[in-house]
Length: 90
Figure 1 (cartoon, rainbow, N blue to C red):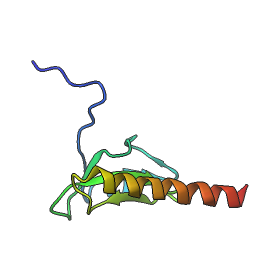
Figure 2 (figure 1 turned 90 degrees about the horizontal axis):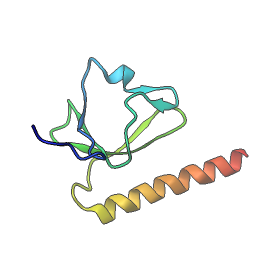
Figure 3 (figure 1 turned 30 degrees about the vertical axis):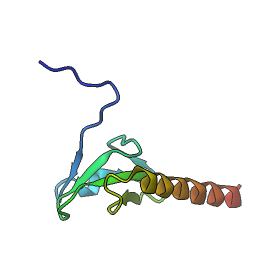
Figure 4 (figure 1 turned 135 degrees about the horizontal axis):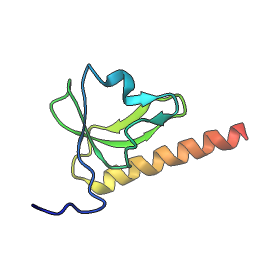
């Protein structure tokens, strides 16, 4: 039996049966980590999870693939945008 790395996250699969429960209000019910792979049934390739908006919209990156620099830039932009919105509210 092989050991799993403690920080390893498996790919989360989303299809028509669980798409409604994938995001619940303001938190992702699957407790995804930034960068975790998500496979949407209706797409041929996996995507990387970036974050969830307060409205419950899940943000995924479909284009970076294995380019971690480009993915990191998208994550930083997402965090910056969310921080600016929170600052305007507060």
